[in-house]
Length: 399
Image (cartoon, rainbow, N blue to C red; front, side):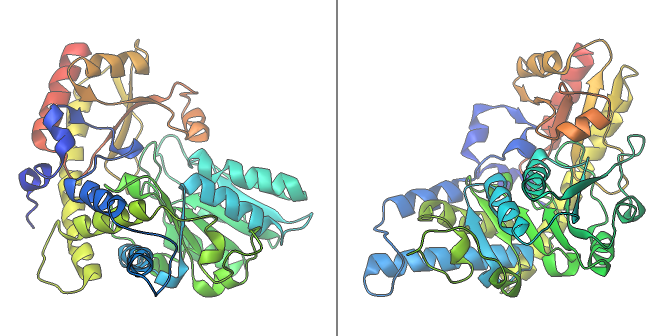
């Protein structure tokens, strides 16, 4: 299974600056085709959606095309694709909407593994209606959450479980499908943060069992916006706060204000870019994505193992990404050195490897790292063996 990383790297103008990038979990670089799609849309006439003028039809095509692209990427119904400013904004909006059906005595479940965007909105929403919050812990020694860990927190009063499909801090990928079965047995809803999962694996929301799944295109080579998918039937049961004259159809009723059409065009281009990483013989974008993501996963896992082997050579380095199933994301610390010092020194080698807790504050505290966190290394389609060699050589000098 081949993966032409040199050809892929040629399509990323930012790589001309010469840096080695391990900062993709915070936002990936953008290929030229995505930037061109954004620019072309900004240079074209767009307006409110409609079917009369050229501008109206173009705008409608952009929106519907982006919904179909995300449906192909995630295995979802395009009629259930909701766009927003960010995953955080969408989760706050949906937490407030879902909380209107909760009552005192109900319970929700959140996890210590998650980014705060899939924790705090639910805590605030629960507090507003007197609902109890229960916590799923993860094992710091293994970096894992088991089905049993989740099941222990479920009761007949559980209304919603919010959990990540992949930790943005340490890469852990919980067994979401098995968790979904337990959640649904209790009659509860499963809200899955897929922001860090989507760039690295082939996603099938229906097969996964998520009732809601969120992601961020800027993590998979697209522009800055947020996406939520759910079944149209489920969305029909929800009534968000909205402007009275605004459209009440699904999914538009959840998209407050005019959409950023140029970013939606860029999102479609990003999905097409991912679909082009592998075998292009299939006429189905979904099938091309399946092949591409398999190749990408193999490529990134190979580089991850090289980094892990290199880190293991240094007795002063402690690694925290230990789960058996995980994304190509590594968190480490160096005994006697602050994470930000390591990050700064790597920066002098023109290596981008940020330090912190990356909004996964509960996870960082659970690992005993507090707010300082560690140094996070993340891989992307443009990551290559030369980048890894540069990183390991720099760490040899620094550590």
